[in-house]
Amino acid sequence: MSEADPDGNRRGRIGLIVPSSNTTAEPEFRAALPAPVTVHGARMSLESVTADELDAMSDDAARAAELLGHAAVDAIAYACTTGSLLHGPGFDAELEATVREAAGVPAVATARSVVRAFEFIDATRIAVVTPYTADLDEKEREFLEQSGFDVATIDGRGLERNTAIGALDETEAFQQVVDHVEQYDSSGLDAIFVSCTNYRSLAAVDDLESKLGVPVVTSNGATLWDLARVADFESESERENENERARTSVSASEADRGSENRLTIDGPGALFERDR
Image (tube, rainbow, N blue to C red; front, side, top):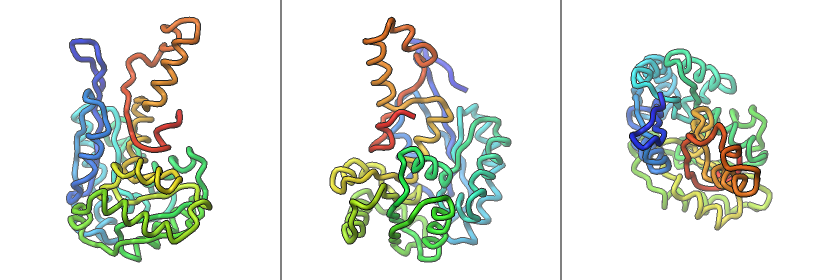
């Protein structure tokens, strides 16, 4: 669990349960988190992003969570998008419960984190960009629509091998989003979703939002934001607002009460700019 360094600064530990072939989630999380927070991974067997392998992979969730619990992490994410939406709405919540019970700490699952993120920014009509094959794109569309969102358009790269997905970089993600979304009237969109925790795209969020004028949510961005919420970390905008309250309210100690030891994360884009 959280502890303090010799200077009294709070440390934190987060756990990520990822497919064995995922090479993106851990470095994207590490880059967005403050130095006192460490990232600890557990892996579930998966080489190809297919319905059969994703289904089998979920059987490893409880054991992976139990092992991460040995590291006394503050919270755990089941960091796989299609793996947590495969069986429709409700399956994501079941995975969260499985992980939470096995590890004894708060837990989130990426598909559920994405839903929470869209609800948080009041997004209803969305465009979706993925690296997936058409059958998984259809499962994702069904999940999102059954969760209450209007999927205006969805575009996939048709990739199945997860190492091929992990070999893509944020410039390729940026270009896929721009090429696809610019075919449509983006003014009618509430948000754009870049799916897959193995698709490097978090670093492209600010540039995409600047170019397209629409909030952009990625799988890892939504998961990071949601994990910080359950672990009681805070966003940079929340810290700035607390500092402003400290300057204008009766006393800094009163404004900071209960939050002075919270860890601050500096994630990209509109999702992290709003107070939770």
